[in-house]
Figure 1: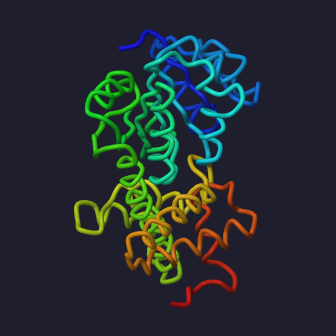
Figure 2: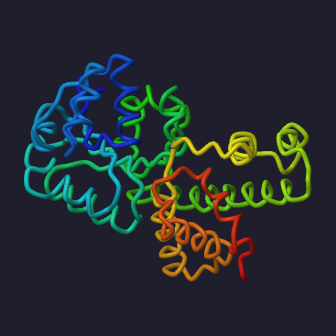
Length: 295
């Protein structure tokens, strides 16, 4: 296991990852384009880098937590990117959520520059990062994935090697389909319960242990009911992921009618200015003229 870890990207999710690593004693080097985000992690014990290249030059393991495939490519292969500073054999651990085909291309390009690549997208969000209980879906060689599992042990309670490069991101797309549909289903059920006059606060307990029970039901129905919109995720990030899932469906000739409806609801809310809000703001869809979704 490497002594130092570099983190590129300290936004909402990257910041939570960095905070957990720094607070559990990891020798962490951090770079973000926003100096304030770097400063927040420096206050927790991390060391600031002047660029992604500078961060990579100080370690042989680099975690990426970035918002799109284009940003990942620029952070690694662009000017002052990871590839400029990285030593041969450096392990790139991409915890971003990007599409599988781009991941395969990035891993191939990285290999030509002596970089090893493991896609390691996550589920569980900021709350699970804070307690080191993220779920990680990983793609890469057996040896590289085993190495990442030691590095990421302070972050994750469940790490699964799904196959070669891109397999982790493919699994994340499946995860996001299930999460997107789950969020929307619980929001819709909450709206129905409210309209029917049922005590929504009692529903999670009433359904606990039954087939309709889920972690999303237990966590989010109370939040939907109380309009608790504190941010642990973003609606526009779900749009990105559902778009990628639909791209994968087209590539594999898979029919996904429910995902199409779910993605459209998320797009509508984003267009209405709610893209930066938590999934709890899905309840906004169920007021006003858009109470029903046309099939």
